[in-house]
Image: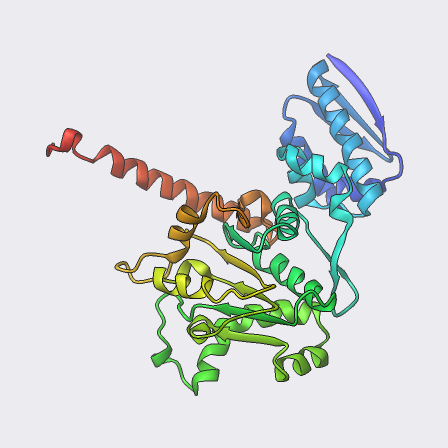
Amino acid sequence: MTEKIIFLDGIDPVVLLGPNNRLLDQLQSYFPKIRIIARGNEIKCIGEDEEVNLFAEKIADINDYYMKYHRFDVEDLERFILDPDHLRSASTGEFEDALVYGSTGKPVRARTVNQLQLVKDYAINDLIIAEGPAGTGKTYTAIALAVRALKNREVKKIVLTRPAVEAGERLGFLPGDMKEKLDPYLQPLYDALHDMIPYRKLEIWIEDGTVQIAPLAFMRGRTLENSFVILDEAQNATVSQLKMFLTRMGMNSKFIMTGDTTQIDLPKKSESGLLQAIKILNGIEGISIIRFDERDIVRHKLVKHIVRAYEKEENNIRSLSDNNKPENGKDQ
């Protein structure tokens, strides 16, 4: 057994341990083989040599991270312990760069490895497909890149679009005129823009067409040049709709498609265009496909557990289905 005392240098113990030792309890759950005792700015750990040394290394990494970024929370802790890729990217300082400063002056940054990959791939690709579960920041990061490109005059306009398809609802049953019917579907895009552009400035840009938000069906017949175009909820676009969308790309334009292939709301007879696009566009130069996962979830901590639970259930159902298939094409 080894006993080691770690002195916290440069990080407030409350930051590392959390309110009511919340982060300390979480940290202890990742190292069940050692005993952790915190007093003031000292942490004593007791256990086998290998485990104690690994724990000390992680505390040193966390301390360096806090000194560089001046933040640390339960999501950061989980990524540090479970995701070595995140730790490597954090050590280079890549998470420090602001994509854009929001309407309140707060910097918007990539916070996960795949968000950072989206930023990097944007620089060298004209079409990016970002697929993954809800809450991973796919659309938010894409919109931040679009606002930055507009402010830097890399493009002349931003076009945000999504299919007017939602679970169990049809436009004809909703009250109001067409705009009133469509606005609820487009609200998440408005919300992200309001985070990054002052309200009055955004209203002016919407009025003069610098920022355009419209359902996917309104893209037909257009050629989008000098534009940053984002298709959100792309899993709900049919094959023909997605082909139509992709062929709108004009000169000096960037296209990003985001979606979650586990949340397809199309009628069962309709194939998701996003699923097909991922399959047939993979490997084409100038096109990047990024798969986000639960490590990228930046919403409430329960969202990660919810996604994990649904994935487990879907895998169980898939496994049962495979086991019940007839062997060699014969009925059992």
